[in-house]
Length: 238
Image (tube, rainbow, N blue to C red; front, top):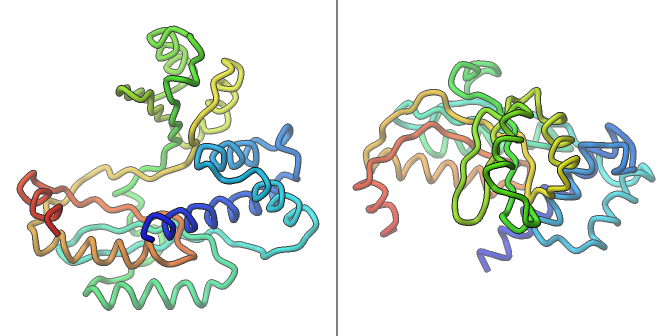
């Protein structure tokens, strides 16, 4: 059940991203990089093609809902910074929900821009090994760095490429030129500084993050909490 809820939330989020991409740059993925990336993300999440086509058609026909992208910033207990990316058709509803989650968890909602020094926005591309289609992995890593990647993280499944926020389009184009399909391509926020948290603080922060995550208007929640191995192990026990 939890997995289904998570999947449906992901599909809703991608549907919104498709709608906003179509509104911003038209319904043709060939000429609209943002839409092309949204469609690729949908494929990476195994979203049925029919759902994708329907979302594009709906947005192109002016049906569906207009979404505004909005961010919220605040602090959870223990001084842990929380940054929220949302897309909503009703900002009054969204801010009321977000505010209620913060007060429920003894946190405080801050003013926009107050956490600009705590989080950095970056482009993140996830590429699975299979997408290289036999291309040399070291060579691919060098090409990604030449194209402007700040960092390339490799594991047994593939690569995570991090690039400056402003290089999102250029990096997406470079990967396309190389014939490499991404599993996901997103703009994410990464903490520049961390706050160590004890078990009580960690539980409170995770409660707030979970409440925010479950809200249908919220796309992503970021925090700068740092956990020791002991605290992580305790949290895992539930």
